[in-house]
Image (cartoon, rainbow, N blue to C red; front, side, top):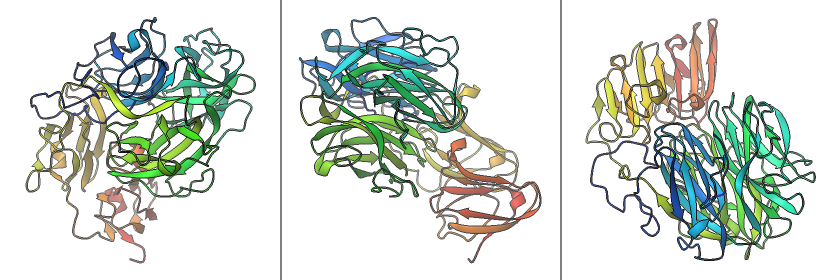
Length: 590
């Protein structure tokens, strides 16, 4: 089941990987005040009541709704999570949809229920839940939170709050559809400026993106969801309502089912100004943004932060106190998390977005504006490009009280995976299956003497089922195999055809010739244009990571005849791999 919610929450990456056994301490996964920490995963069809008032900067009285970032981690089965005000009947909607072993965050705005609590439902399996509070709305002002109601579900046989917008069929890209918002699910027919929606893209048939904007206006150059083939993706959106009371959805490619739930609404001219989405930053080369600033800056390295100017750009005035942003991480070279906070303040122990190597992931954020009219974004690990679109703004006082993110719930009871340095010398492993952290540390590994039949797999579990395979590979020639074992992997397995697996160690100098196999750009080989006398069957891949995921392939080519081959390997590529039929590549003008 899919649905939307109304919370704004942030999460810390981790917890999915197996770790060394040691006593659990209360500080392993602390909350802001020690309450609701280490209470254990939520059971199938289980409900947890979470106190949100009087904690993390939220006052004990006068609170109408809270903005949260909610993250599910370590789920033991495919399922969904629903968040709603305590004391009310659980809605037929969801805030997060996930698959077994996947860590998924989503922002929500949820009205506060009985006793200052919200309810959290886990549909199936056991799931750990992490909740961070980002801010709050005063009762009876600016924002009217609703019990989530379904307005659109294109899947056959599904229902909506009133029957409209149900079973209309997949959106085929490039193409768009409109759906009515005003007068449905608790949204009035008039006086509505913007609505808070949870939008879920279900099982897209191709990589692409979805854009949400007011009907009747030109489609903006921005996106709200970035899609990976076959992966269900949710994201919260705040969007102005068109003059006809409708909202438009655009799908860029392939075919995708769309599910939309309304979480609440903002009155016209009262506290929140919704904007036609405008791009404020895109670190990728050659991309355009609303005013030409902060484009093509280059990927943000792990362990560093970048400041994004928001005031005076995209329609945000000098009197703004907080902004609603859509933040997207694209082409990450490793699993990581992003934290967004006001520039000039200390970085909080929280996150807004969790990313997996090679996958593009978005999440909406509401964040107070900091020093010099900017917000800061921190990337924990690897290199990742960032795309930031502004959706609207709140005035400096009265409508939304932004907080330094504070953790209110962390159900995890197992200790956080420690950072384990490689053992002394070069770690080597023979064929077999190895538990991450306890038997194999996360990091980059190489099988120097892999031969035909070398097979490996990154695993989310060790039950031996195919759905535990995160990524795998098979090599039909002799040459080095390289793979990144991620901290979120439960285990890694490889066969005897790979030979011994060793921790990757960069050579003293990069080469200007390329032999069959996998190579690290910048360490094993230099970037540039290469040529080879390719035989029929020659196949090569430019890689954004060594994750083994299909999305890690940045460029690829296969030869059906004998021919001279050329390839330009970018300095931004993580690696390059070619099979034996390509022979040896030589750098042009080396």
